[in-house]
Length: 293
Image 1: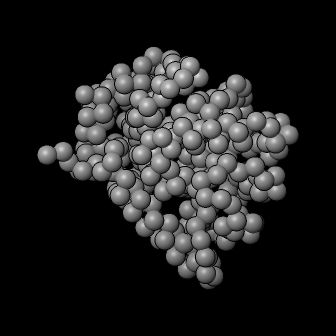
Image 2: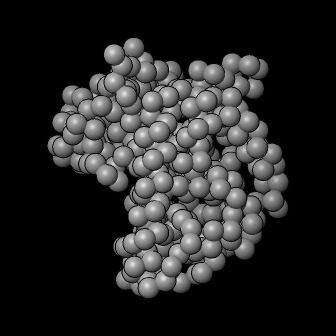
């Protein structure tokens, strides 16, 4: 009998959906208690509220006025978010590699990258062909925030659950964007689990080789890398309908070690050699192993 999953596959869908809904409700309740108001809906920035000494100042960021799961193209919202992440909301960006310039939010996407909306819509159609991604997309993704940077990069944060920050580098196609979104969804799914369980019972900062960065990284970051690779691998296995999709899979595979399945296997072996896991963390490692068996 196959054990139910927490992170990957059909049996993980209800786990992810329920955990996402529960955490959103708790986040709304906690922020409402702290601020003495009644927030009506979840926005990713409320995840940061317990870390702040005062309420979030920009009310626009507290309004649930966007389409769930959509790419944010509204200039005023993006400008407000850009101001927030360089001031009161700076902890969301803290610890990212490089400089703040590398992670600037694209505040005028329709002016400087007018085709990203179409690429995003095409990516969603590709992802919807997979029953797994179709079911877990909205529980994992509240919004996608475009970044200025031209090279392929993105990030997700425990302090902004549901917000995916993602570059749309040239040339961006629906297929490359779909793989990039899948990558960040792997992070988001692990963030949900990490919010209720440490996953790693040994030193979270012990050096473990990362197949994405090709160097040692703290253990928890290497576990995140494995989750991101696993989600890309799942999506890639259904992306063989045309040359654009095949090229995108090949391109991303080369960027992440040459073969996504091999990279997941290597990342898993590195983690098991260096780390001890909680019961939930052990189940996640088993899911990675089954994925590439």
